Image 1 (cartoon, one colour):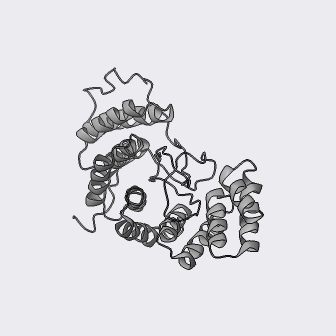
Image 2 (cartoon, one colour):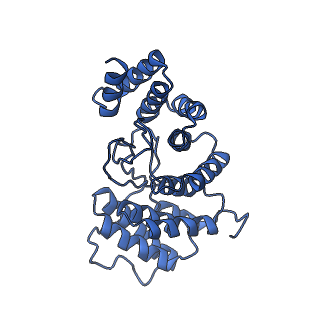
Image 3 (tube, one colour):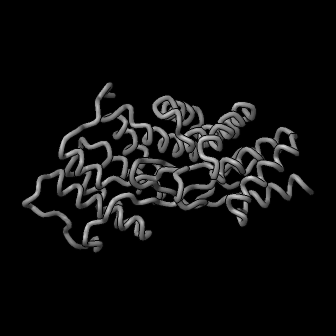
Length: 280
């Protein structure tokens, strides 16, 4: 793994930044609850999927216990064309400029729910700028949404190889691994994400989720509490905290946490379920 690489700066970096997609869980204004993931206990653990600075991807699943994800948030203006069959690149532009076009269009397509088309454009961006960590991150996020675990994992790992301090990539990779049973490795990446970005509410929530799945409820409670402190309207963190308290037999605390979640989102199903369990 390449180490201590610093993020690029200059004009090309600006163009690349405009093309990023991120899955940033816990960001104010982002949509809520998109996926589910089986957990090892009776807890309803709400966890964010992969993250980044521009569009963060999620994957819908099924199971008894929910792991809520955030819906994509687009921070950049899309390219004018949104037809994945057209060629977005202009040969008169540099590779990085063409890559930005593909990334911007991929972002728009992803927002529209056209994930396969978005993945195609992100792959083109990555082909044009193979040493751009964001290009790998974006492609990994699309592949994760498509359920292509191994391919997504490889792209996140490549993003981290290029830029070892990429907190969002560590967070996304940790989430991906947690969803496929790799809890120990997931914890390592999530702790790295928090070391790099200690104020990441999503990383605290995600780490708490994995710890709770391992039965480490005391430490999980600390991370859920920090997540909601950092982001008071973080409905998943409130609900996760309630379920952790419920598993500890702390009914009053659980009720308070579920009620806090419902004040944020009155129709939030996992919180309604948790409250019903706490008040049989």
